[in-house]
Amino acid sequence: MIIQILLEGLGLGLLLVLVCAFGIRRGAVGMVHLYDSTVQVRCVELGLTSNDRIRRNSTIFKVVCVPVYIVYVLVCVYVINDARGFASGFWQLFFILSVMNLVDRFLIDGFWVEHTRAWTIPGTEDLKPYIPAAVKRRKWFFGTLGLAIIAAILSGVMTLFLR
Image 1 (cartoon, rainbow, N blue to C red):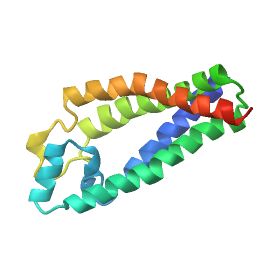
Image 2: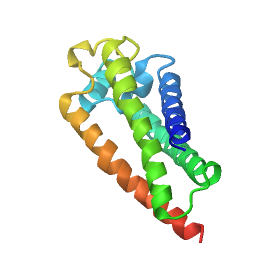
Image 3: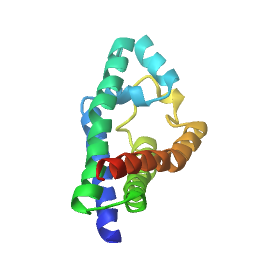
Image 4: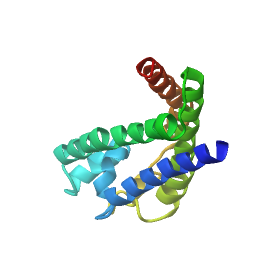
């Protein structure tokens, strides 16, 4: 069961990688909504994008991707793994989300963004690292406590729904 849940977490991480790859297919400016506001401001000043386009891309990302990620974990946990009860659902949801978080922190942020040119936006190189230490700390904090809260909420809702 642990191996299956690990694979489901890696699948969710792969989905995140694919979303990022799609988002930067025409250049990293396509995902500038994920960057610090100083990078966003610079991209607008350079004429690479507009505030409206940044807001639009951010909204699309939230409206499309977040529900897909939620449906993915719920299907894995409650349909494929047939979890019942709060505790069973919670630990599986939290484990899958945590694996995805590790993929995001180490593979995407730690390697892809920091050590390749794929996420470099011309004219903003002086603003590197794109993910400052304070942002990394917040991401790690949210990736632990925040995902635990999300897992608890989803598990609670599903426990009520499956009664």
